Image 1 (cartoon, helix red, strand yellow):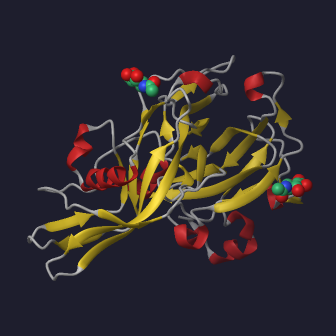
Image 2 (tube, helix red, strand yellow):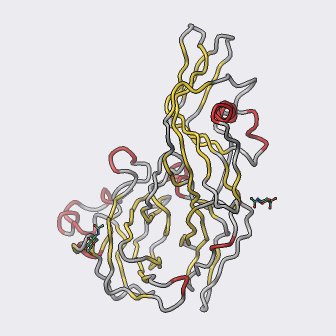
Image 3 (cartoon, protein in one colour):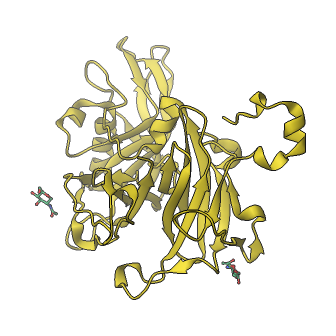
Amino acid sequence: MLSNHLLPLFLLFAAPTIATPGFVAYKEVTCTKPVDIFTDGDPVPDNKLKIDHAVTDWNSHAAGHYYDNLTFPDAGVSGDDNKEAGTQFVYWSVERPDPGCQYILMKDTRFGWQIINPLPGTEILRVAEEGCYYTPLTAHDSLITSYCCGQGDCSIAEVEIQSNTPKDAMTGAPPACTIKSSAASPTIEDGQQIAITRPQTCEAAPACTHSIQLSTTVTTAVAHFNSYTWTSEMGTEVSFESGVDFLGATEKMSSTFSSSIAQSWMEETGSTVTVGNITAATEGNRQMSGTVAFYSFVPHYECWKADLDCGKDSNGNEVVLERISFCQPRLSSSGEADGIFSMVYISG
Ligand SMILES: *[C@@H]1O[C@H](CO)[C@@H](O)[C@H](O)[C@H]1NC(C)=O
Ligand SMILES: *[C@@H]1O[C@H](CO)[C@@H](O)[C@H](O)[C@H]1NC(C)=O
């Protein structure tokens, strides 16, 4: 991603600090007065959060560069507005990413990822152009920087574009699977971040509000990070691609492998497909003027892992799908999906 290879070598050695792109913190919308950043009380060099790991770099770097427990003592703090009390105003100067690449800034969350959510945190800023970008922060937030390049990788980060195409398109009846062994208790996981308003430009103060126009629900999901292909005893090709399938709202899902897995799970555990609505109840975060942003929601899920026994293959061997997660959205007592709302700032 870096354009180092285009630079003459002597330049690289002479000025190594230009080699790594980053989010550099400033006080105001013009990005002229720098703001010091501290991580666990230690200064961050050059007030710069380095962008040096890709969003697909899961194994070696957990999809980004983590900066724990950040404070910005000199950043502006919002006034008495309840919705934003304690919010610090931090502006990030960002250079232009290489063509086709985007820089991503995320907020770390308490819950797990990699089950349903391919992002290690909640996206708060994503940019493809150089500029000075605002994010609201609170002291002691932990942030994660990352980047993506190309349509495939960047689709992970483009949370405003939703698709729910079944991963396991198949012909004929899916094989019947039963639970072979499962975890006794669930883990709490972040679901995929969902855009609940369209990106909008806020031209002037007072800062724009967002009202939820997109009808969005959060539903039961089956998640699996391995792909499997086998020939059944009947001679049918069966394939099960890695990914997350959401059940419930879409009719399309009713005949898929995931839905068949979910069915057997629900029969054994006495649970049902759960659909939660996202309502505007907690809306209120306001968009800063002069920015482009959309409003988003990260649903919380409870996930159970299990190994499934799916009969025998054509050689008579038992087919076991390992570590399949069955996930239910957490709902409030009134049936609303439980989770976190936040603004995502993007380039225009
Ligand atoms: C966060 O950093 C502050 C210093 O800014 C330190 O006093 C505090 O103990 C840290 N918190 C955690 C949870 O490490
Ligand atoms: C969710 O929204 C749908 C459609 O607006 C509505 O019919 C349903 O009653 C809602 N469910 C809950 C639990 O509020």
